[in-house]
Every structure is written in C-alpha cells, then in structure tokens.
Length: 612
Image 1 (cartoon, rainbow, N blue to C red):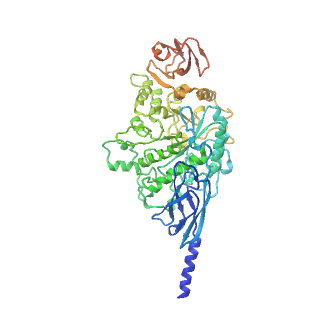
Image 2 (spheres, rainbow, N blue to C red):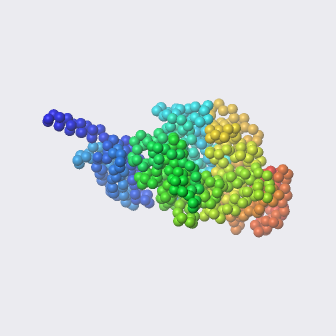
Image 3 (cartoon, helix red, strand yellow):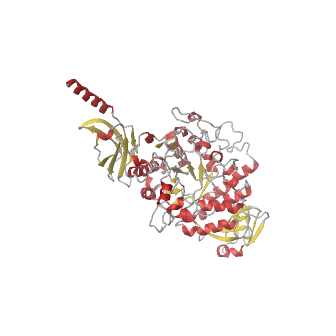
C-alpha cells in the first residue's frame, strides 16, 4: 500500500514538474501607457490548478480567472502610472511550491509614441497585396513546417512576394508620390491552401514567416520612417483562420459563434440600422461565418474582446503604426468595436482607423464614423470609413452616358450626400481595391476615363488610396480575386516586363506612371487639397467643375468627358474664382494667363492652381 501511495505521489510530482507555459499573450507590454490595465492570456497544460504570484514595483495582481478549459489562465494586472521598464518573473505554484516561472517584460516606449500622427488628408496611400508585389527574398518562399508552399502557377497559390520586396520598392513608391503604405494582412496564415491573401490569421502576434517574420516587418517600418512615409496595418476582428493554434484547444465554448454547428453569415449589413429587422436576421449577420475556413469570433466574450483590443495596441506600439484598416467592420459585435476604437484613440489621440463597411448607401456607412449622432444612441470612434458609395458613383458616372440622371451627375449627387457624415474630409476614398475589379477594367480599359478617375480621387475631399499597379494599367481577364491580385511585373526575377525599370512597358503604361507621379508629387505640398473646402458646380454638357479652396488659395478641377475639347467661360464660378486672374495647370505644366476662360482637352481632367 505504501509503495502504491509513493508511486501516486511520484506520478503527481512528475506531472506537476512537467507543467510549463507555451504561450503568454501579449508577449510583452510597455511602461507608461495611459491605460493601467493589462490582461495576460496564459496557455499551458493544466495550469489552472496553479497559483500565480510575482513581486515587481508598480505592478499589482488584480485577479486570476480560471475558465472552462484548464489549460488557460487570464491574469489581470494593474500597472502604476510610474512603473519602470524591466522584466519580472511570474511564479506559478502549487501548495506554495514553485512549479515554474515565466519572465515578463515591460519595455520602454519610444519618445512621443502616444502623439504619433495617423494618416490624414495630406497622404496618398498605396495598397499592396504582399504576396503579389515583389519577391525580395526567395529564401523564404518555402518555410519548413508551414502547410502551404510556393505555387506561382496557381492564381490561388502563394507566389512568393514578401516584405523585403516591399522594402526594395520603397524608392519607387516614394518617387510616385505615395506617403503611406497599407498592406493586406501580414500576420501568419498557416492554412493548407489559399493562404496568400492573409485574412485567415493563425497567430495574432506573429508576422508570417513567408513574408520574413516580425523582423522584416520592423525593418520595413525603419525604412518607411527614413522616407517620412506611414504604415497602415490591415486587421481582422471578425474571424480567424481554422488552423489558428487555439482552434485545437479552445479557451471557452463561447469563444466562437455557431460552433461547432457553423452557420454562414447572411451578409445583410443593413440589419444594424433597419428599424424593422428581425432578431434572427441580425444574428444571422453578425454571428455567421464568412466561410468554413474562417471561424467567427465572439467579441461578446469579455476575454476575447480584451485580447483583440490589446493585440491592436500592441502592434501600434511594437511596430510604430500610423493607422489601422479594420476588415469587415459591421460583422463583429458593435459594442466591442466602440470600446476598441475608444481605447485606441485614448492611447493615441492623433491616430487613425479606417473601417470597411462595403455598402453603397452613405446612410449606412456614416453610422460608424466618429461624431455621428445615431438615433439609437450608438457611438463609435473611428475617424475614417472606406467610401464605397463614392467609389461606385465615380465608376458608374465615368462610364455611363451623359443624361439628366446619369454620367458625371452621379458623382455630383453622391457628394451631395456628405451631409450624412460627421467628417467627410476624413473618409478614405479609392478607385478600387483588392476585392473588386481594377478600376481600369471597371471603366472598360479606357485610359482617358482611368486618368479622369485618378485625377478626381487625388483632388476631391478625403484621403486617397490607390491599388498597386494602377500606375501601369494593370488589367485582368477573370473576375476572381486571384485574377485581380495579379503579380506586379518586375517583382520576380525573369519577368519580361519590369515596371521599376520600364523594360517591356507600353508607351501608355509609362505615360500613366508619369501622370500618377505628377499629380501625387504635386499633392504632397498642396495644402489646399489637404485642408481646403470643396465647392462643386452641377455638371453641364459633359463637364464637371469643382474647387478646393481656403481663404488664400484655390485649385480648380475640370473633368471633360466629351470627345472634343471644351472651352468654359468661368463667370459661372465667380463666387470662388473672382479673386484670381491666372493659373498653372498641374498635369501639363502649362500657364494660363487669363482665367476668364479655360480650355479642357477632350476626355481629360485639368487641375489648375489659381493665381491672383
């Protein structure tokens, strides 16, 4: 009997001795943050039977939460405002005997970290799909242990583009006039297939090794800083990847919605504001999965909500971000989204967040912007939203016939809806993105219409974003995402066409490069575009005129869809133009000595800096 008892004690001792922590997230934090709360999610075999203690000045143990899964502990810490940077051991004990300890670090913040300036109307953002831009480091094309390798022949496969390729291309992007870069998600997507797009995260604290890992991401930020350029991170709160590490050991039953039954979302985003919406439709929208490979996370779970909020703040501080683009904005729990935007902007008051609400109705999009006075009392704090209504209006307005209700009037009428937004100047505007046909294809591969559209987006109100390849007339035959997100020519060794050197580019493509570069580099210092008011005049006879103006400066923009040049008498625009006598046309560089009339070439835009 004694031998049996001794054996049991030995087995228990061996089991306890084998216990350890395999994950603590966030992996570190910072001293001097405005929020004094920090919650650690700790994962390890049967750690819920252990007690937690530590001794570090300025850090107080508030609580330890045990949940359904004994392999998790959630540790709530209180950080003093004056806590010093440093490392301390967190002790995990049983019967007052230490089983193991874990060293946790509070790092020192970079100077003026809290005051960082987010992207704003002075910027032009280049949107890049990393896997499809440039393969700067072929050594990471295949990573041992990861589920999907290189297959450039498959439009759904991984093609090898990486962060080093983006670093190698920054001079090119800067010469084009870009001041900010938004990358489609770079976090680990260790999925068995179609992982290149990045929207099925398998580790929220790790950049995908096939992109170069966290180290490459930090190098990218260093190189952007050297050029005065900003970095925007694409984040996803609605879902993770089905191969995320916690999917193999879920913390709680309600960590996901509709699990394990799996119900696909109905995508009826209007239910949020619909006064007649049924509960079943509302739940079907926010609790449904996008696809079976993307589990729908339950942000009403307070531990998950805290996890996501802290994760985004961690990346801002760790990487030095100037912005976040949040995917699928209306799909997560909206109260958590409010808490998140408020927490981020309390920590970083000048930061910017833009949300994806893919609706063509500005009344739906405006609900989510900071400062909106919603009928239901809901408050959100996102400074920016993606302006899908304007994108659609410009695409349709340029290609549609000029009639009383179609053509350029569609752009004019959509902008007239700006009264619905608390701050239309902060909306992010764009001709296209990674989820829709390229704008060049949308307008029938008509270079003139493409140029007019680009000129419009770079001069109207808002923060413009341009998708990589627009400057070289990138096109596609198919309409699937793999077609739209094609490889950038010159990004791979052996490419016959090279957009960086011009080798193999058509004359039209080179001309488009120059067109984009000319406007965007002018725009960098055109403060009247950054902060000026907008006044437009109803389109007439296939022309649309609008102004950006301040008390001491004005820019006149004219879009002419006609197949012949148009000369416009400018007395109609006297309420803006009367103080000016001449001007300089930005695209051609020509001088206009007498502004009483303006001649606009056929099917083109002119951008005129007015002079007194």
